[in-house]
Length: 403
Image (cartoon, rainbow, N blue to C red):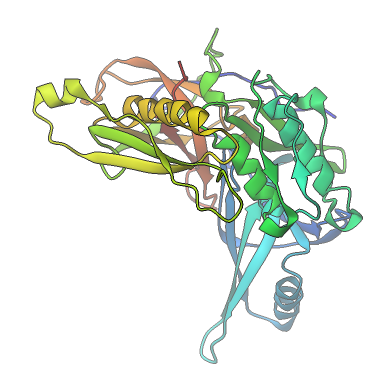
């Protein structure tokens, strides 16, 4: 199995004219989810798909029905949503994979019918399976190993084995952190929700993706947990010229931002049948913003601390509140770049890695700057014939290193 070259970061030169290249051809293969046996090559139009770190990415595409054969294909696909995988091929390279979950037909007697399909990347499957037994996670295992265990246990049921390769050997970098938490079967919790406990933990959270590759006629899904992408440094950035950035944007929103922060932590009750009183953290204020003239803007959150003592809950709450102060003080920047791919070798499997961006001297916002951006937390593509092939990268500068 030959994987695409794994680059830690890319170099982009905005507004640079590139040599026109032949537009790549996108194909969409629909296969049986459990066996990967090919059902059909489907001529989807208006396709959009994305990848995200530690979360399912989305897929959408439509079928225009102009004859009986196409109607039968659409009917067959729509009746089997939930058991069909969809693969996105860019020329001869496998670019995306996921599951068709929904179909909606718009039927008219005066024009062609349209069937709209929606799906999600393979990460979504973990949300459709609930645990069958009480789950006590081994506290001696690294967080990244537990993510592998969750997928491996789920796939021990042959009807839930969608072929995701689970191996400690595919852990890019261990987190060096542990989480003592148990789950009850009666909680009706899905494996996906269990995974979120490991990716969203503010102190020890990790990241994971499911990479997709093709070797000959065989397609592979590889689970790749790692220490949080936000913790990985940029060293010796690889340079790939040929990018052009026709546009970029900054979204600055104060909805989740503030100048005064605290947490409330739920703890285990001391007696059975007794309600536990949440424990408050200290209150942390952004005094530097107060000095600049910012008003009081409260941010608070409630945490699940049932796995720690009351004393530990206070420390846990204080840590999270102080982290929110660093992460959510003032204005939050979420930056997106629209990138012409050209002949570059970027692949969606590189989601989560950092990219180096160079701004041209004509850019009035960041003229001539070369900046190491934060990790790409999402990528979005909408390939369409006759239009420039373009991918949107989203960076979130709140994904900082914990200290």
